[in-house]
Image (cartoon, rainbow, N blue to C red; front, side, top):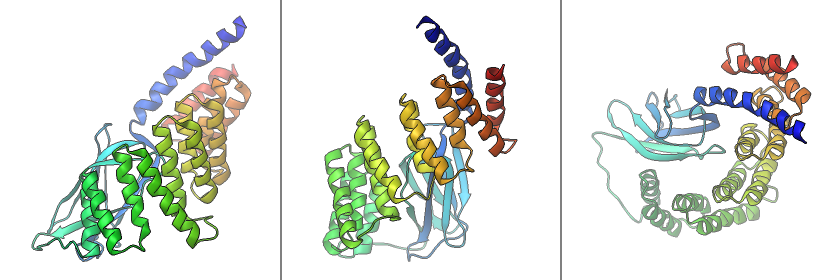
Length: 322
């Protein structure tokens, strides 16, 4: 027993130095995506707008430009809180002061730019105006007011039940989890009524992932895993979802559970190197050295040479092959 304890200490000590390098190199980074579209007040795409993401938690700033369809995206994000600023000459700038970014899945952001010469009014009987007001209030962190707008929208357009996802997200921000769950479940109930088979339905998969993250935020791991599994079963097109679930479990010390999800990510995309790297760390922590080294080697084989983590992986391989 004493020898096993010494072995674990020898394994974990070098891991501390490697982890420090990884964390400093990837502050605020991960595998999540954030994407959206920029439209003018008439709903037309705005090309050439500058979209800037500034993390309020980490030292991270990213900038991109909308394409001809007004679309934009940021890749490689971790869970954080960010400010989004959208600017273009001839338009008033639009700022989302505080946007919660999930490490799992993020809803598409629809951002409006208003021409400087335009004048706008609010009509509580116009569904579009009411909905846009709800979005604006949500983006400003006025969640209770946003809920009122989305509920008004549903009074005007009761068939557009998808708006309940927005209400659920507001309740998540307010940490009123039971109310959030109720809203998400109402949308899932409608989707099940509309579609006999939800396989491939990205909205349903996203809602299940949101429920999983909601339970994870409350420390309810088993409930969270149930919903994460349901999300993956519906949409197996993106390895980032199981990978990010693996990251949450790994960081919580749930090594065996994390291995399961990293392997699912590999099943979805066997040529994506990140999962092999994390499996190497998992098996290193389990003191299964030969398996760990094999995964590190696979990561090195699949990764570009300029990836800074390649040298780290090579160092680990060299150290434990001696």
